Length: 140
Image (cartoon, rainbow, N blue to C red):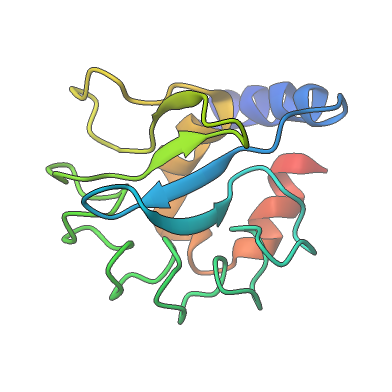
């Protein structure tokens, strides 16, 4: 497990050092609820890695890190962390290009398999306890 984690961080560090397209999460039954930016920095107001923002706070109703909220936890049908979620969030860029569903369900045929998604799937229950520290571990 430790080796995989170190390798994933090394890959993400090389990816994050290059210019990248901002990827956004949309949730809800019709995927019309904005849930934040997946790969924006921790100071961005729209970042899911901003502890104090609407999308990174574990207390916000618009955050995937709110385990009791509509879009977080392991029981909501809209959460990426529910193995049986009917409506997990989608990942898209500003032009609407689809990058997959953010879901821990390994059987979902359009599940996102990017390195950042795989780390989130594996460590989500730890990440939600200290989002900005995990941003630093992953991207710095």
